[in-house]
Length: 415
Image (cartoon, rainbow, N blue to C red; front, side, top):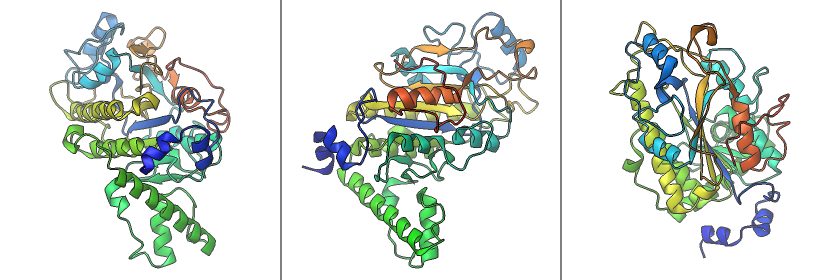
């Protein structure tokens, strides 16, 4: 019996004991996993879900002479919204009641700075900058675990959301990480510096011999698990099926990790280049269409693999961005930093209340309804989106330390 078969045959109390996790009775499914896709740069919500009728459509066309979606694809139960034609697989998920949109999602902090807003969102506090992330604190709230791959960032940088005391690891490439050796990292300082780029703890591995030893333990344990995942050789779809670019590579590795290792709880993947100040384009071409097409192909293939490999039933995906864009296009045929954006929540129909768009009451593109006369307002706090996923799907018992000082609200995205 291989490692994966053993784990699957030992679900329940035995696995909980082996992995030092508390009972998963609070969660709706066994071994739930959350995948967070962060669209860095601020995706344009009115290109993802362009208005298709009424006054909002007229105002949309008046505000955008070139940055407009003239022939949106239709979606059911969407009121006066269509969907970007490049999002074909995303549209199918929506129609299958496996995906919901949130229009006006964002942070209550009013900054339009990328880096400030990302820090507030990933720190889980729109007022105070924190050195640990909300996903790491959620893992801590689930209980003590020594498993080094509880939280995994499949990308080049460790995001703030996963930084903290709970075991988390950055894996920019599953295959490359699996062959990582200590050769060339013989000195404590060199080895310590390398590990801090991979693991969230300890914070300063160069401080003492004890912390260097702890870092060595993190790396050795992680290597053993990654090599086990590679040994399982999960038959995910080909790299070309996921498309081109880093997002395709990262989501394919995420599928391999989740399918082979049911103890993984949170996976974050970043998708950059959604900052479309110039030449944003429309449904026929331009930077944004290319980015959305990459997202759609990679996400659709990931979901298809999740269903085929048997982990879709325990998976929830959240797609978010730090903010939206201005309603009107600028002089460079793009859009500038805005406030309210768009988020997606996807998962099996038994978990996600799909085929719906959460829209602000009285949604309007009239100048009087916009923030500073230019931006969509933030009507749904991203903490409410993630909070519902973390409690209902993950089984986090309390959000008090995950989102300090916040009174939870529920947008009703999960069953």
